[in-house]
Image (cartoon, one colour):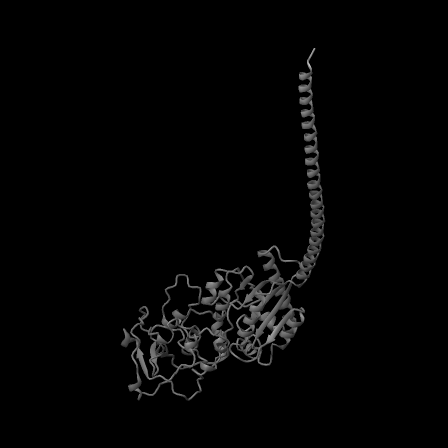
Length: 439
């Protein structure tokens, strides 16, 4: 039988254990109460986050709806800008000659060609995109150019063509900028700047292939993916460099592929057979004569021409500045010259009695009469000499200065085949150097 002391010790141990148990239970309950409070806080935060997410979702849906609306509005306003310098990009003669109907057809075909080009190089152009076509030109000057080229008769004008073009579509505008060398340039450059920075403009189709004046503004945006260049006549030298970096195309059935050139006319360096003006310049200006520039080399050897007309032509004529000019010619008449031009004669064969081109595509045939030969020399001079005023080639049959001088309408439009330096040249001959003096 246990003694009292042992029982008492066991009792005290049991009480201590009970106290420890109660303490543990209290601690556990307190800990659970802390977890419960934290859980409640977390649940409140989650509820707040849910409400915030729902708010954001509702807000985003509102923004998406607004963006969709803006996108739809933007698509409704998307346009393709077609900018045309009408002075140097000339519409095909069939359009121009057919007046109002031709203008209407030209506009419609240009729209179709532009849309086809844009959709071929870009897949994200909305179907609702419209073509805004703006043609800027000096209409009086352009009318004169078409007349001189024989496309319009003397009494015809461009009014009907322009009216038809403007009425073909609500976004087609043919604008008369008035007389002035750079009026079209200023308008076209301003329109280009506006469109290239306009978010509604998906592409600028730029039609002014022969004017180097546009090279600078195009070069500033040559990294753009929204510009296309249209080539009518061959690209001018500086435009050609820019064109290498941009998409290009040709609308050959709409724009002429060559500059407007006048039919045979009789400008200031051509005289008729009845004219009394002497073809031989005075000989008392020897003190003003200059030598031929030493840097120019003579052309290839050509056998001595028998015809005295050719021999007189194959002479280097100089003015008081030492610039080469061409002697006056007695041309027969406009109709005769145009008929001769239509024969596609070989200039070198008939003028120089020499043609080294294998299988020459031009007519050789029988010799020409003296008058026909004179007319052919005039035709050959319509092609500018690359050496221009400094040419010393006695065998050169090209033109060395523009026959129309300062009155050249094409120079004013910036599209004459002859360089600007070849206009307004003093054509008074003070020295003539024939072939034998040069060789």
